[in-house]
Image 1 (cartoon, rainbow, N blue to C red):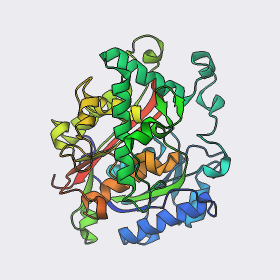
Image 2: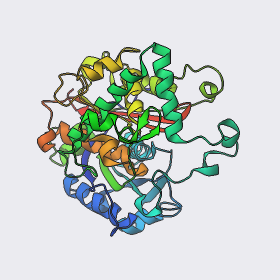
Image 3: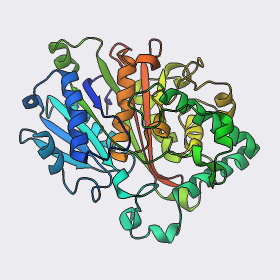
Length: 402
């Protein structure tokens, strides 16, 4: 019987670039920047790394095919390096590959690194996926856009629970204000200016009810992690060891897109969260999870995810949000403590590891002005695709003795 990943792998080093408009740096320079911070934090030599995984979604416009760009840029010592892509879960997929390699005993120490360089492409949003989503994608939902699909999630959510759409929009505005307040404290965030609910509610409309401040932006960035066994971590002199508690992945089967979905939740997140809590041994996530970084590509995504993570009751997330339950100092479960996608933007291959970077800093008490009081478990969540068809990944990390 499968025993899961809990406490079999430790994180001993992490690095993250400043996210933003990095016009003077290519993807390779961003990889080197996050890697150098990660290696310095881990305190190991390059020759100690047994294998590496690279997360990157738009290889055609970023670094090219294969994992060679990472191996070349980092001058890795002729080890196995694998490039992975799984939409917005690509960074967490790289982390999953490294963690599973260590847990299996295949290697002692592994590197996970993610990167995306999107500002150069000239798009206001993500590049066109076109046939990259499969040859039959256009038959399922022709002319669909991400803002349009997530806007329908917002109106579908309001209709399903009988909540006035203006009340949902106010809760969405609170989410954006909260994330911008946190991002203003983070020197590595792309956007560092606090905003008011009035500004959010009066921002230009993108796709009703989503206004400009309900949408995350495009950015450049990279993040990296070094993982090993807890025993090796201890032999390296590491203290207050942070271990991986759960890693779960769930992909749509196509049924919710076709006929059995209420249009008001994410099937994959609901499933992945339940499996992650089971793997991590968490019985009551509302009380046991200390902090979260979730996939806030749009503010409604974060709102609905609160329920799919089994933290807010169905139909109650707007109330929890307006009560400040997810605020940094709200006494509940702080969410997007680093500013989230809302303030970091979404360089896809880097986002999942960037989220883990914040959880790692918080667990080590190194988050500066954003530091939370004695967190024990940190959860990260990525959602790639559309509400009715997507890839979802969830990771939970925590203190070794938690």
